[in-house]
Amino acid sequence: MGYSAPEKRVVEFCESKTESLSNWVRKVKSKSLCAKTKRKRDFRVIAILSNSLIRAESELLSKQRERARKWAQMQADLGLTTKEEEFAKQQREKIDNIWKNDLRGLDSFFRELDNVKPLINPVG
Picture 1 (cartoon, rainbow, N blue to C red):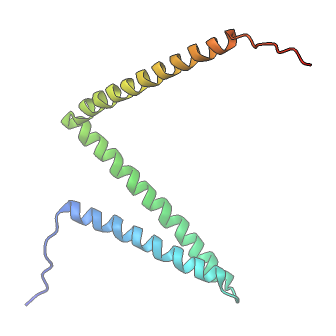
Picture 2 (picture 1 turned 180 degrees about the vertical axis):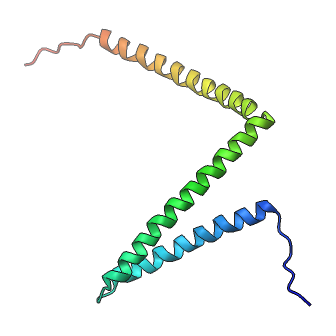
Picture 3 (picture 1 turned 120 degrees about the vertical axis):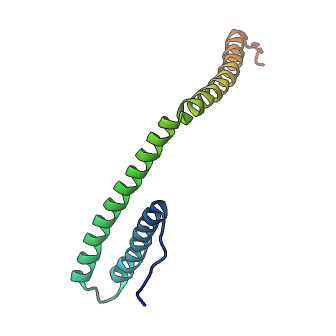
């Protein structure tokens, strides 16, 4: 007889909150742009939309940062970060070595160019 809502997991609930905020920000940006480009502008509406947009964007940014922080903490707790960091470090070292070898080759090439003496052609 009563209303029963399907139970959602906590992750789905959090995602839906963040997604709905993101969608809301997108819609308000669109409305704000329309209000600013109208021939007869209502500055009160523009001010309200701008203020709401700034607050919503800062809230969304803080939620995204918090989620990233929690994700990083979870990775650290599971030991995923160290393996990934080690792999990334190895990749960076490989790339650095490739660049160093290329740059050494260029350095020696330019040194050889400096040692080349131009031929002097007599004019006339």
